[in-house]
Length: 221
Ligand code: DHB
Ligand code: MG
Image 1: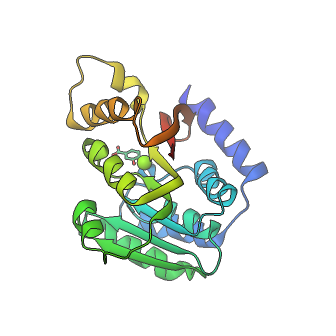
Image 2 (image 1 turned 45 degrees about the horizontal axis):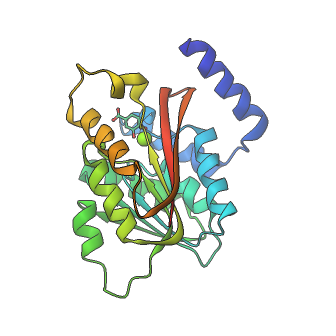
Image 3 (image 1 turned 90 degrees about the horizontal axis):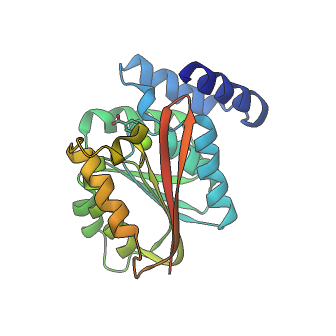
């Protein structure tokens, strides 16, 4: 099925996803550094992130897990010139490529890349830091429960939280799979269930060029 899913993603892209040299440049540069673009969102998923930001007129966006900044550039594309994007990457080697990709893209919007653990970076922000309107969580899956609570701490009524990779080809319902990345996602589902700070929440399975995975979306109460 993977070939069909990939072919269909390419069909969707060729019709609906405009070419953006800034995005292509990031993909090429990431390849050249020997990092796998498989860890980035697919173009049609990037467009979904863009659209969720546009739908909510989000101006302040937080990304936990920059990787090489491909998704970051999609988030930035969606923002008005006076928007603000904070993206946090825990790994120096990824952050170095991300910084290059962000610099090369010359986006209109202010993009701050912070290196460190999300908890440390966010807790070190000034006390008067306004909350974020849109939060994309795409970092180490074992820490998803922590990142969800952090996201809630830095959000306001109506903020949108999107979590990537919450299905993992079905591994999350395989009782013999107890890798930290999988138990982290299961714990995240438990936390999302009837969370007192959420207005509504769902998860969708996706298939495509990135295989079988999925994303969760929540609206903060
Ligand atoms: C992996 C991580 C991701 O964020 C993703 O979108 C795909 C794969 C991974 O670590 O394998
Ligand atoms: Mg991901």
